[in-house]
Length: 312
Image (cartoon, rainbow, N blue to C red; front, side, top):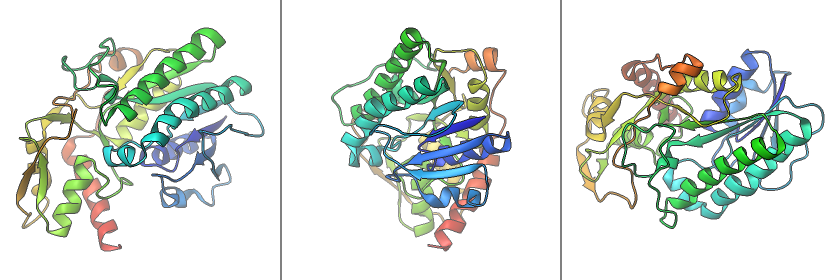
């Protein structure tokens, strides 16, 4: 029971490592720290079943010993990150995915790809079921991330069909929780950073665009169940409770005595107007649905962000 986790020093990756170790796995993390951080894994430093290795998965992977599972999480995930590293994002989603799949093939290991709701682009269907092919601009600024993940899915299915690798694909919707980077470009950390800094909280567009926010513990539970399943086609994991950005920022402002005012800026190009998962498949196949309410999750996450901000 040994897993290789690419991108394991990131927000989601570090929480998944916690879960794997709790289930008795040995874990080897490969990360180049473009967006991940060693501090996310510092609490595991003395765990004898855990190892961390600096590595760029866009280059051939050499891992000694047996491997039971390869979990490919490596990739910048927030818009500012993948717009800052567009070529690296494309490479980790193409060459990096191939290298991770080749490792699984060589080790006769199972493989899980963390894909994204961005595969649906700016959807014309809501909520988005796995059967929906998406509405994506392949040459827009967000295309470096969207198309890298779509390619990753296609390559993963090719290794399943042609090489017989036991593969799984999770399409992750907006997720939040401790270990997110403050002001990383995503809605929650941006709003909280601005509120803590006393600067206006930025709403892009009219704020009526929707998102659905899943607490990280719920997401990890869904991923772990998918890991153990026999399903090879993509599965949505996310919270189907849709909320507008204006409603979301109002929830956050209630956690502050004197929150700063809102400021409106133009909507970024190709920013999706609706984002909500259809989790029918996850309910049926994995017996999974989110358990943590937005208020519960925000309470824990806000406490984490406030501590991080105070210790800067």
